[in-house]
Image 1 (cartoon, one colour):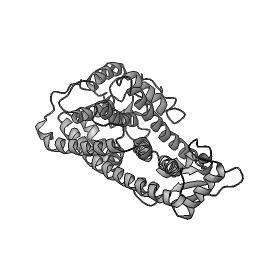
Image 2 (cartoon, one colour; image 1 turned 180 degrees about the horizontal axis):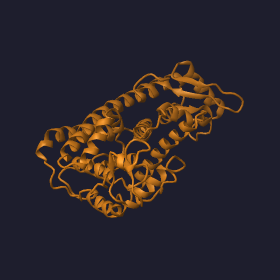
Image 3 (tube, one colour; image 1 turned 90 degrees about the vertical axis):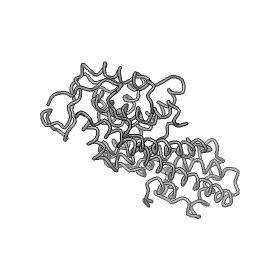
Image 4 (cartoon, one colour; image 1 turned 180 degrees about the vertical axis):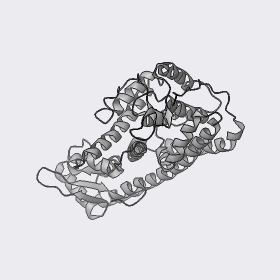
Length: 369
C-alpha cells in the first residue's frame, strides 16, 4: 500500500450547498451552549469535572480503560493496583494538562506549530509512546491498522515523512485562514491533521484537543471548554470510517456533515449537562449553607465541584478553609446528610477518601458511587 498523498488546503472542491441545513443547526446549537458557558459564574470550578470526563473519553477512543471515577480517586490518593490502569490514568491527566497549557498560551499569542509540539510533549510524558519522538514531528513512515499489522495490511498509510513539515506548514496557514464558516473550517482542520498524522503516537488525542482550542481562538466559545469525545466515542466506527474514506475522492462532504452533526448533538448534550451542573450547584449551595451555618460553606462547595472525589486531608490544608478540627466537623455534617460518601476509611496517616456522589454520577451519566 502506497503512502497517501494529502490534498493541500484550501479545498475548493467542497460542495457547500448540501451542508447548509446541518450547518445552520450546528451553529445555533453551539451558540446556545456558548450562551450558558458565558453565563456561568465560575466555569473553571463548575466545569472541571467535565474537562476530566472529556480527557477520559478522548483517551478511551485510543484504547484506554480508566473511568472518570478511577481518575478522581487516583488523584485523591487511592491505590491503583494494575500497572496498565495507572498508565491509562496518567494519559488522561496529561491530556488535561495539555489543554490547560494551551489555554494559557493562547491568551498571549495565536496557535502555532511550536505549541502543537509542546502539547505533544506533555501528552506523552511518562506514558506509553514517550519514546516515540515525543514533542517532535515524525521522521519515519507510520500507518493505521490492526495492532501489529504490516504496512501491506494497513487500512491507511500516512503521507511520507519528508512531506510532513510542508503539509503541517500548509495546515497551520489554513488554521488561521478566513473561511466562509468556522465549523466547516474546523472539520477540515481536524480531518487534515489526522490524515497527515504528524506524530508517531498521540495523533487522535492531539487532534481532538485542537477542537476546543480552535473554537476558543476564533471566539466562537468564550472558554476552550467543548466536550465532543462523548459523541465520537459513541460513534467511533463511523468516526474512523469517515476519516479513512477521505483517501477516496468526493468524500469531504460526508466527513464534514458527520462532524457538523457531532457538533450539533454534542452542543445540545453539553448545554443539558452544564445546566444540570449549575442547578446542582445552586441547590447544594442553599443546602450546605443551611446545614453548616458556616462562612466556609461556599469555599467547601467549590472544592466539591472542582474535586468530586478527594482526600479529607486536602481540605485541611486548603487556604480558604478553617482549622483541621473545624473542617472535619463540616465534613461529618455532609456525610451524615448523605451529600458525601466514604469510598475509603481513614487509617493512621491515611486519610478518608470521600465522594460527592451526585456530581460524580451526573458526569458519568449513570450511578457509579
